[in-house]
Length: 200
Length: 200
Image 1 (cartoon, one colour):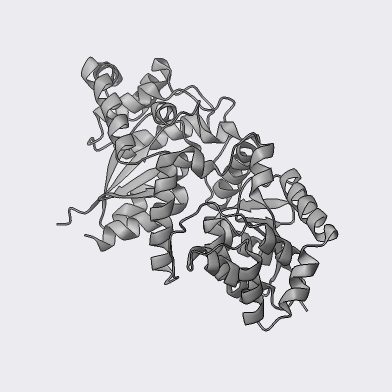
Image 2 (cartoon, rainbow over the protein chains, first blue to last red; image 1 turned 60 degrees about the vertical axis):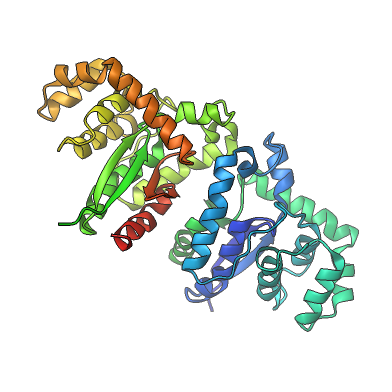
């Protein structure tokens, strides 16, 4: 039995986290690695750094490039893609759901479905009705899952997880921790997985 | 004969351009591609975007990560690396030299040597004496090369090249243009080369 794992830190509002989510589960399993799903909210991380929001929003040229790059990368990986009409979207409710159920056997499917809702369906992911439909589609007791996600303990746990990531040096998403080593960006996903496999 | 080419835009102050410079010549030649060396100054690009300097300087956590990441990437590629005691360094004189001689047969060796001066020797790359020694070491007429680099035409040409890059959407370095398609970051070097080879 192999207990090697990679910590995957992501925000459902982050387009490059959509790319990582589409691949991490298969790539990790092919290396005998477990994925530890670590949803967080980037808003508080950016604000703690003195930013008003995503670094991409500060530089129009960089933001314009990001949309082109995402289209290009999705085409190369044969991933569906639609540029969201709102960016970034609030990701509070799905982040709470993912946090409260990060060990559930359906966590990878749930995360994949939420990212597709945002970046393929161009839909509001913070809407309880949308989450209800999505969870039901996964064969889950939607009301129970949502109620648990909205408990004070889960709300507090998401604040603490976000702050814990920030204190460990995280400044954006997707991010990957292999022990204390931080890998940043979807471009470093395979490097991080290789490092995790090597250190196992 | 193959006239396919990739435009390589870089700043001698940019650490990730050190990585790209170390690899681009060999990787391009293996694909039958010519490298068009396009030095620029990122300072005016950042200022035009309303920034005070490198985006990395705006976020201490990101800057700290960058140094760790560079050390890790250089180790993986068996590239020498020393964290510079000054960042970013002024890169004005070597940029002018590279611009004035971008078609010279020694351009790749010159650029490689300047990046090593900055990121291996930890030395001032804007110092005429340092450039003189470096050019002499490459077997060149250092005084002639430096005099030409400091002519009003070359100074103006560097300003124009920087502005041209910015107007085409460039916002950081290293950047690669394949036609009008912009690839950003050393992580995208091979993608850009593959695209250039495909479109040839």
